[in-house]
Image 1 (spheres, rainbow, N blue to C red):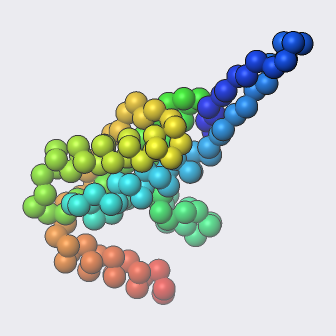
Image 2: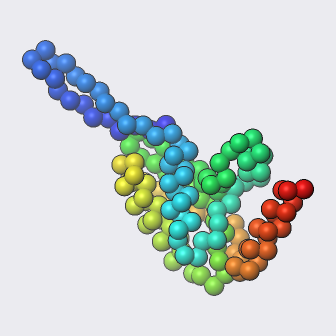
Image 3: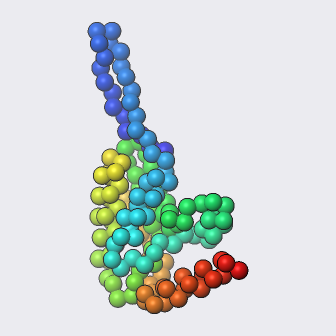
Length: 141
């Protein structure tokens, strides 16, 4: 959890008030996930081997493939992405980093000091759709 602190000087008794705005890590993860998925060339974000277990236990599928380290004023974000075939990975990375930094800072006020993207796979849109449909069919069985 992170916090932004604002100290205010009180009246003549010199009382100091401490106000704090804090965010659960999952909030920052959600912001980063939505932001990264909005970038053209990103098919999806992919969680690790525990993603399926987490979802069955009530975890949030939206944040699969996203992990954050949140401090009091700064955050570092790691993403694992599946990119669309034909897109420039360095260009997509640059757009992801810019979008994530901008959205996280705008919504939370936290400074994003690092965005790391690991490309897990490159697929055509058709291949991705087939794999997703196949995965959903297996989950229903």
